Amino acid sequence: MTRIVLIRHAEAEGNLYRRVHGQFDANITMLGRRQVAALAERFRDVKIDGLWSSDLTRTQSTASAVLKYHPELTMHLAEGLREVDVGVWEDTPWGEIARTYPEQYRNFNQDPERWSVPGGEDFNALVERMGRTLLDLAGQYPDGTVAAVSHAYAIRALASRLMGVKFAGIAFGDNTAVTTIIAEDGKLTLEQYADGSHLGELSTFAHQGLANDHKGKKADGWFAPMALPEEGALYTRAYSETWLASHGNLNGFTPALYLGSAAQRVRQDPACLVKIYYGEDLAGLLELDPERGRDDNAGWISLLWVDQSMRGRRFGAQLIGQAVSYFRKKNRGRLRLHVSRTNAAAIGFYEAMGFEKIGTAEGVGGQLYLMQMDITRRVWRLP
Image 1 (cartoon, rainbow, N blue to C red):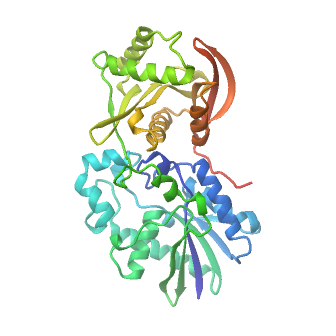
Image 2 (image 1 turned 60 degrees about the horizontal axis):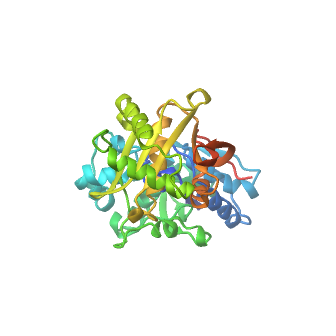
Image 3 (image 1 turned 135 degrees about the vertical axis):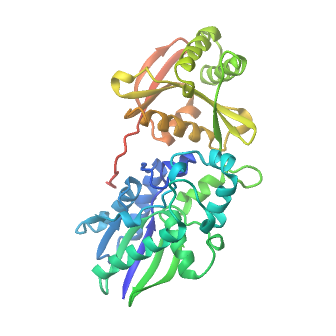
């Protein structure tokens, strides 16, 4: 008999940015790092004979939890532990999927055996892949315990099959939740599903629950390009509100100057200036400058604005996610922005996203911090 401790990865960019990340490779978040530390304490005194992970960055980062108190182990990689391949959906905002693929969005969440999109992995093939991989691992550790780090959908799919219930009959496990499976005589038996008792206030579900709308739905947005000069009044309003929140006044704010620069960038690349919507309601704006910081391998956020009525629902995180996606496609390794040194709320938000202060500058409206976030894909190791 082999005991398989099957672990979901820590909170990753797709969870925070509300983007579809199946086999798309992404980093874990700042909260994810704290979850990994909590997971390490859970396994401090647990006997582990082998450690495996899917070969994606977020799972390898999570597996470092086991290594903290079991440094004698070697982390092995297995493609068979990967998340479901979602084909053409990869790195698309969930709000966009719900809007453009309503039937398949419902199937994916409620009836995955009917789910089908170009390039997507068949549900039964996913279950068979996961089962076969775990049996292969168990064969290497007879009468032992093996820890395996995988992904939410893949774990839920296998667990539903082992429990003999429909996929919709059980919920997703939280980030770093632990599922225990017994392998014996070529068969898998579910012993425990998705235990997240080590998380406490670090639960991703609890954090995301704070961002739900009044009906408890995830506030998932979708993006559309902004037209200039047609929507110049909206752009000016968003910029002036952001300036006022940063500086306490509009001294130095020159609407025509900023509007003209934005219009020029939009003519070159409409994706530089986008609106985020929740349903049919405008939630915010994002303006990017693809030239600024280019020589330093950095991308630049010129404007990030969330409408007052939409704040507290993580649209700011989704705007950051859009910026990360945009600049990764341009092979930039860093994301930068300026923020007023007096804007404590904005500084706290950006630090929670993973930005760090790396310098100061004198702006027309006052002193600024230069903040930067590393967006290279990199396996993080628990210290």
